[in-house]
Image 1: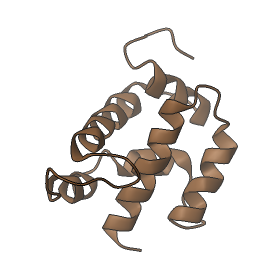
Image 2 (image 1 turned 90 degrees about the horizontal axis):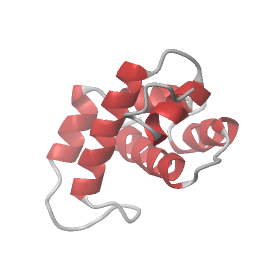
Image 3 (image 1 turned 180 degrees about the vertical axis):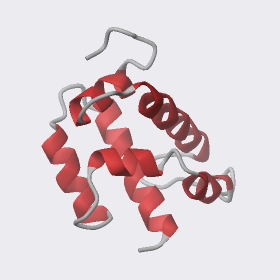
Length: 109
C-alpha cells in the first residue's frame, strides 16, 4: 500500500470523524480497513497522519485542486489536528475522537 493511499485514506476518514459529531468508532475502523487495509484501524490511521511520510505527501501537493473535497490547506489542518489529538489522547478510539473534536478541552473524555 502506497504512502499516498494511506495518507489520503486516513485524511478522508479523519475529516468524516471531525464533521460527524456522533460518528461510531467501529464504523470509522471499518472505513479505514476498506480504504487502507484490514490491519489498519482509525487510531492507527490518525497516528500515521502524525508522521513525516504523511506530511511529505501533503507538502508535495500543489496548492490547487482537491481530494475528496479537501484542499491542501484543509489537509495540513487535519495533520496538525491529528498531532494535537494523539499527544493528548490517553485511551481508546473514543478518547481519540473526543480529542479530535475538542483538542483544547482538557476535560474531554
